[in-house]
Image (spheres, rainbow, N blue to C red):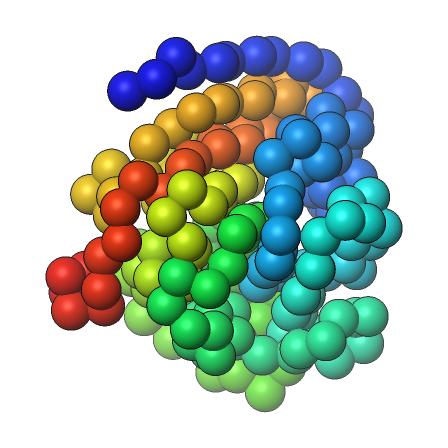
Length: 185
C-alpha cells in the first residue's frame, strides 16, 4: 500500500455534498477522463472539472442531468473498464434512501434499505472503472469500494461540520486490478 494521506477540515454542512468547498477541491484534484456521477443531484460539479467528460444521473427528472435512472441501472449501461473516475455520493442511510427515491415511481422495499443497496453499486463501480481509475466515495465512514473489489485507499478527507452534525467523509480509492462481474458474485 502506498502512503495514505488523511486530512481534516471544517466547513458548513450542505445537503448538496459537492458544494462543500473542501470536498469540491478533492473532486477537482482526483477527477480525470470520463467521470460518472450516479447520484448527481444538480450536477453542478461538472462545471468545476471542465477537462473531463462528465456523465450525470439523478432519479429526479427535474434535475439537469443526462440520465434519470436508478443508480444501479445507470452504472450497468457502461462497459467493463470504460470509466476513469466515479463520484459516489449515495444516500447515506436507509432513511435517506427512502426520502430520495420516494415519489419517483419506485416502490421502496426492505431490499432497498439493506446493505445490498450499496453493495450492488459498488460491484458495478468496480466493473466499470479502468485499472488505475479512481472512485471518490462520500459517506459517514471510510469503507469505500473496498480491497475485496480490488481497490486501495489513497486519500481520506474528513470534513467536520460542528455541533451535532456528522462529519462528511470522502474516501479516494484507486482500482488496482480488474475483476469481472462473475468474480464479484
